[in-house]
Length: 366
Image (cartoon, rainbow, N blue to C red):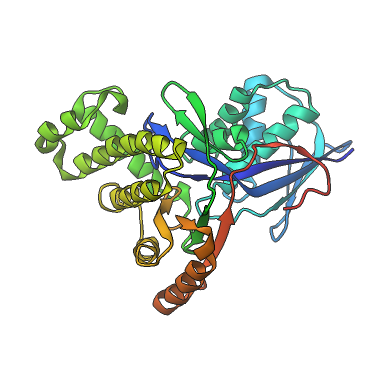
């Protein structure tokens, strides 16, 4: 019997590169999904297929990393076998997706979560929400080799429609924040500059942030305030000072944004988004020419409350908070200017806060 499961992508409204630094984040699950079908077979192989990709088959007793799309799925099997000793047998898994890859919308976490939810349901593993997102993160950290924080997998499991999630990644305490956008909407602009996180830049930033913490003699950025940073600027040196400055100031912006969202103060929320982007560009240095251009151009267009780079950076997408009535004009202007500057057709997506991973039927619309 074939069963179907979906997991959403996510945008992080505010709190970038803070999740693996035990800070605050504010993700939103979105109405872009990975759809996975799973069917048990009498054969001894696990067969994976996805539109536009070479099919992959492997045996559960010899799971090896191959450096392609299948690693995100293999990692889930590897983690479950390592932690639970599950014997899966044969199966056929087919993947389709409406989440653009490499755009910073967390297609990899959605893929991992869709699979682990499917295996949990089909094989009766009785995993709770915490185990679902923790094992999915472990697959990406230890098998794929990307030292991501918990936010992406957490949002894919825990998302709720018309709601953002305030998440304290140190204490793993979360709170749902109503996100009734009213006359506003979120638009994602995909720069088409796509990153490969396992290639090094992402892990380098993580190591630099950890080094800054070590120099400060602190165990966590939750022990660091602006008052701690300024007197230690010489001790840290310019690079480590700026890395730490971003983390500390971004945590403050998440708390400020939470209050604004609770009061539907979207004009001031836009201002916070712009401040975040400037910090990501100047202090954490994870933006690129293309995403900087998108943000700078959006700031000049009427009807845009604010915008910032989202995702790991080094490419990817920009999230813009726009007035609904002006959205069509904003998108048209951006596409023209981006094409003139870079010769690239800019993609854009209106995204809405969505529910998290769940079982669906075969008619689920991607």
